[in-house]
Length: 485
Image (tube, rainbow, N blue to C red; front, side, top):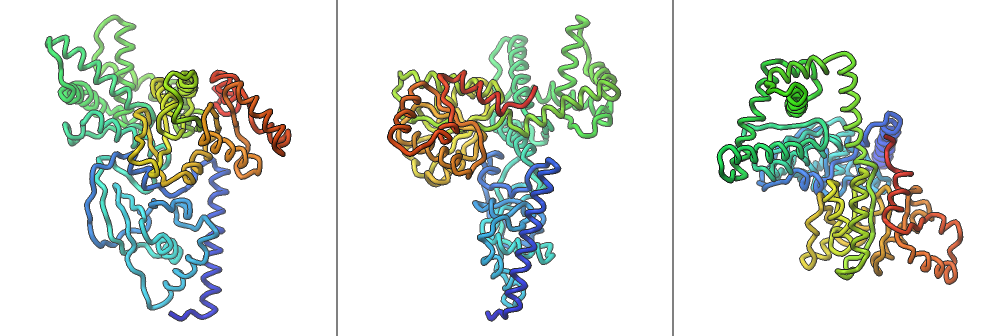
């Protein structure tokens, strides 16, 4: 293919304009306080939505606006497929030049989850064709099966909610028991309450019928005897009309809670209809509505912030079983979860498992960054709520150093490697200032050795904080990261 000089100049100008628009969008997102329009990560979405299988769907013409994700290259383009990295300029330009020739493009290769397509091969083609105003593209499609609906406009909080929904269905099997079910919340943390409702219903069924109620039967009967009747009342009483931004599931929980409150207050049985009417009257307008809206806003903001932020905890996978550092790690995990922080660590055993266990037992979230390098020799610990699998140490460290704060426990060479990398990134300004905490007075002796034997300066040591225990670490984190009450 022969390309004249004018086309090369045009391609370069087109990339510059597209890159500029991408940067402008980021500035607008910052000032508007909206979430970054990043491409969805295929691995993350697949893990959250509990994909159950896949099948090849062949060659199709798909809408470009439904392509919102990537397999492994989601940092190179934004959600609109505007280029986000300068290093892709030359490749982008070559594709732009081909688009203006008679050569034509081969189909791109995509995965489909719900209504969203994730590019396996063809990112630059998608970007260029969108830049040229195209609306569709030829693609070979592999469909991944999930019971959770997904659309291209999903944001981070919506994805978290869908992940909670997928976990709920996996644990209860409700979608198999009642295929027509659709229980979707607009607020985080609500599916756990449904688990509690099912457990309570199972207990009372067992008491009434003097037998052990199988789990599947309890789930189905809760849906038939508790959830579905409440949803019917919501529809019959037209309660949703007063709460257009909420869902039937949201109102189900609120009305059940209202029914319980009224029953306790009045010392008598309250019908679903009475509870629905009273809830709508109290919270449908006026001061009650403002109170409800404020509570909803706080809950959604807490979900978007994932508590007070993500704290990466570095420690050892080979700590002796009876070493005190394991108890300290477990306590740290529990304190972080109770304060609303998400824990991130290497995902395996030792202090990683202890911290994960502490966080999960306190109801928190744990992200484990595991590696193909260790598979199948090591298995992730069972306390993770989310696994991020990467190839080897380098992408692992990149993910860990993206946390909002760092806590270093006693460890070995791996722990020191992670800690010194973070230290270097902070010292050189490659990451912005954030809490960098060493737990245990033993670190002071090591720092003294660093002062004596290295060229590190006082300002380098000012980047790190040594605390005696997990409580001291939490105090630093709450001062710097935790959201105001």
